[in-house]
Amino acid sequence: MIELLRSGFAAADEMLGFVPNWLVTVILLAVAAGAALLVYAAIVTLMRQTFGARHPQLRTLLTNSKGPLRLGLIVLAMSLAVRLAPISDAAATIIANVLNVAFIALLGWIAATAVQIFSQIYLFRFKLDTADNLLARKHVTQIRILTRAADVLIFIVTLAAALMTFDQVRQYGVSLFASAGVAGLAVGLAARPLMSNLIAGVQIAVAQPIRLDDVVIVENEWGTIEEITTAYVVIKLWDWRRMVVPLSYFIEKPFQNWTRETSALIGSVFLYVDYTAPIDALRKKLDDIVRGSGLWDGQVVVLQVSDAKESTMELRALVSARSAPAAWDLRCEVREQLIAYLQEHHPEALPRSRQVLEVAERRRETAGGPSLVPERMGEDLPRSR
Image (tube, rainbow, N blue to C red; front, side):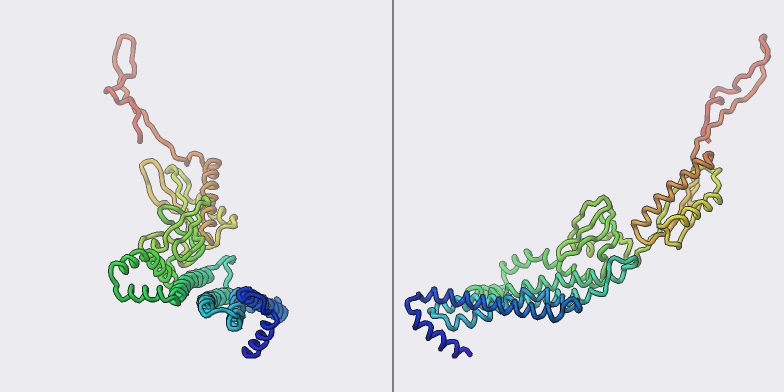
């Protein structure tokens, strides 16, 4: 086929001998690229009409493979055109080097696209918008972290392979690896944060101390895991601020994960009441509150006297909910309604400070008749009990 194209191009070159060679080369390369794009459009149209909307996985394959397919066809067409172009050996060598770099980039792009396609097809069966999404969050977190780590490795390998096609870079790289001296140490130290986060990402993907949408407390800040990248984690705080934390933080330092095993949580509400507070009535009221709330998951409702202080009793109410936000709202609802119940039905049970005035009575015979006077100075002062 190449010989047939060469004979046809030679005949055309004789007819257009007045056209400069460089212009012929440019036109030939442009025609080759245009023909490649036409073939690409025909292939994409055929695949779209064949698969349509009936096969979502194949549609994902088509969507992600458009870029590599286009680049591959262009590189192939221009490689054929270079063989036919009337150019010098030096120019042909330069164009060949460029095409080699493009081909290596194409291979890296294909590898990254394959990783993306696999991850998307694998995650089709998992939905994060469900009530109990623990399994889905586990798999989504694993796949996303491993996918990003694989993308970084593919980029590094592709870049290294592309640079090694040049003789000067190849010689420098060989001498650098052979010497392994101060320069190698400097490069290693400079790459340490990148490698540390990359290794931490793999550890998090395997051990999974955190997952997407996990509720965590980091540096005394409450929030949910919004995004996990190859270098950092984005935490959406309760007031919509974003905290950006290095990935290695979750391997090296302690933190709280409220949804590590399950999204359900037990929330606590503390009340301080007088010793005359009716505990049984408060237990019944707490039961009525949670049963009338849509936030309670029907698992835990407890009211206990958790402490006895000098002037008050400490009551602790425990209630459970399906998620951390629901647990917070349920705690606030229980606290508000219990306080309103005490104010309305048992105001005497609210915390009070008692003071007792003690006076010793003693009759004195005076000219004016009997009178009440303190037995000793200071005994009529108020005392707290």
